[in-house]
Each structure stands twice: as structure tokens, then as C-alpha cells.
Amino acid sequence: MGRCWNGWIMTIDRHALGFGYGERAIYASDPWTSRGRLYEEGSSPTRSDFQRDRDRIVHTTAFRRLKHKTQVFIAQDGDHYRTRLTHTIEVAQIARALARALKLDEDLAEGVALVHDFGHTPFGHTGEDALHEALLPYGGFDHNAQSLRIVTKLERRYAEFDGLNLTWETLEGLVKHNGPLLTPEGKGTRGPVPQPILDYCEIHDLEIASYASLEAQVAAIADDIAYNTHDIDDGLRSGYLSFDMLEEIPFLSGLMSEVRERYPHLEASRFTHEIMRRQITRMVEDVISVSQQALAEVKPHSADDIRGAGRVIAAFSPAMAETDKQIKHMLFKRIYRHPDIMHIRAGAAQIVTDLFKAYMDNPKEMQSHYWVDHIAGLAVAAKARHVGDYLAGMTDTYAISAHRRLFDQTPDLR
Image (tube, rainbow, N blue to C red):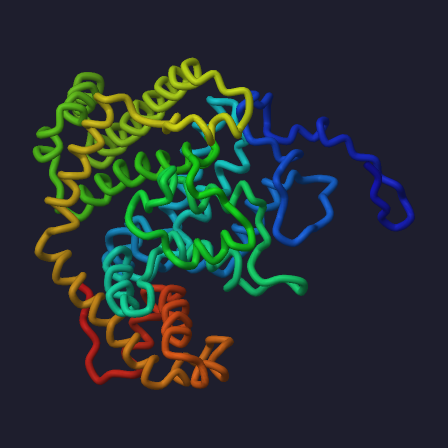
């Protein structure tokens, strides 16, 4: 392939550049045979289409906003707790490690991991629940559908189209990384399919009744591995968890015994890290082993064979799935439903609810929203969706600041 710069003709061998960082398996997604983009674009001489997707995702406003969006503990709790951004980066690292071990396209796996939380509201799941309640008369709110809206409509960076014009494979992974949205009979697998996803599929069919690529599947399970491990780390840091509580879970108890035996006098912070890194390693190795066994059974000869396998390939073993269940139960009981956290959640929900009502009453208050001059004339449902877009895009800090500007009293989220 040739490209001209300043009169010089440069010939580039794509294979010599090492796209994918290693040999891909036959069932891996191939960027050179991608199903393409909604709006046709020329190819790059130096990057595959999946690499370009990943790079576009990283350079978005939505990605930067993740820095100030809650994972579990809001920013005011301290600088060392995970934010939605640091969580996303950790998920991407684990997804890439899994993809490399299974000889998948690492760039696609990383891209899906990097974009998977774009649609989250301020204040984590609390904000999402509050916004869903406010938008219930107008179709509700779903963070996965909002991620799709962001990358296909709301990001306004390019002269020729709205959104990022990502490849079909990246969009498929974003929408279906947790599995099919429809049964073969056309029923929703987790309730009604959000309307924004159905609307997009009318113009660019993402085949929501099938499974996603294996790259998307490893991104999904990397999410579980990351937050299971790092919510424990943050829980120990906050004091909501103790080592004695971890002893209640056999898997974690075994890891602690292993660390104590090797390092009997280790300080608490290093002890925690040694546990966490072993947890990630064991979970990653478990997924690799299970995936390899599933691949041996399914014998896929293409990425489409993965989609049509009728089962998840990247999964935990039964024993590790039970551990995953036990860890989630502990986190909900000890952290997510802790009275202190519930108090903060109530205040965060009030902020989102108050802002929604204020913006519905007077859309002009959405000062930085590019549709602000046109919203007043829209139907109520369309106006509500714009308000939802604006609120979902807020960071925690911006939402608190906006509430203080509009209301005499703002909940103290501490």
C-alpha cells in the first residue's frame, strides 16, 4: 500500500507492522474482513480498523468524563479509590491479557472494554436507578443503550457524521458483551430491549439474538474479575471490609493462607496487594482453561461460529462461578448496602431527581447542551430524552455543582 507525504511514496506492509501482536486463531475477529462502518471510510495504512476504534474511544469526551464518575466510592472519599475511569483501564488490561492467551484480536477486546461503561450516569448505579425512574414514562434508562447513543449519536467530533462511526464488531461487542438481548423466539432475554438499541438496529443490524464475538465475551468477564477484586481492595481501604470477613469465603481464605505462609510478617497494604494480584491471576487462568475447553468442544472455524455456538465460551468454571457469587454477595452485604453507603446513595439519587425535574421545567438551565435552543419546542418524550442525555453525561462533581447552582440546599455526600 502506498501513501504520499511531501512528494515521497511510502510503501507499508501491514503484516510487517505486527497488527494484533501475534498470530490470531481461526475463530478470532479479523479487522481486515470487518463488516465495516455505518458510514464508509477509507482504511489506514498504519492501523487496523479495530485499532482505530480503540483510539477513537480513548480520545472522546465520554472517556475523559469517566475520571470523575463514581465506581463505588465517590471522589470526595479519597484520591486512591477507583473511579469509573480507573476501573475501565483495569478491565481493558485484563481483557487484553485474556485475548492474547486465546489468540484473539487484542485491539477489539480492549476497545470493547474501554467503551463498556460510557453510558453510566454520575454516582454509579444509584444515579442510573434515579434516572431510570425519572425516565420511566418515556422508555426508561439503560446504561448499555446510553453507551450506544454516545458512540453513534452524542459524540460530535467529525464533520461527516455524528458519533464515532465504529466498526460493526465494536458496536456488537458494546451491545451484546453480556450475551444475546433476544431469544430465538424474539423475546427479551433480560426484559424489553431498550428502544435506542432497537432503533439503531433498524439502520445497522447488530444481530442482537446471537452471542457476541469472543473478544467481547472476554471483555465482559474481565469486568467481573476487575470489580470483584478491586471493590475488595477499596473495601479494605475504607474499613467496610476486614480480613476476617474475607476468611468467610474459602477461595479468599486460601489466598490469604498462601500469602501468610510465604510472607509471615507482611504489612497490611502489601498483604492486600498480594491477595488481590493472586485473585486476578487465578480468575484469569480459570477463564482461559474453561474457554479452551469450550473451544475444543465447539470447534469454531470463524468468529461467526462463536456467535452461533448457542453458549458462552469465555466463562468461569463451576467452582469459580460459585466463588464469584460469594464475593458479590459479600460486597453487596458489606459495602453496597452498608448504612453509610445507603445514606450517600439517597443523597445522590435526590441530586439526579432534582436536576431532572429542574431541566424539564426549564431546559434553558442546561447551559452547555448543544440542543438547548431547540428543546423547548420538542414533544415531552423527546425533551425528556435530551434531559436524560445531559444528566447521564455529567460527572459527579458537575452534578453536585449544578445542583448547588439551582437549589438552596444540596445533600452532603459524605
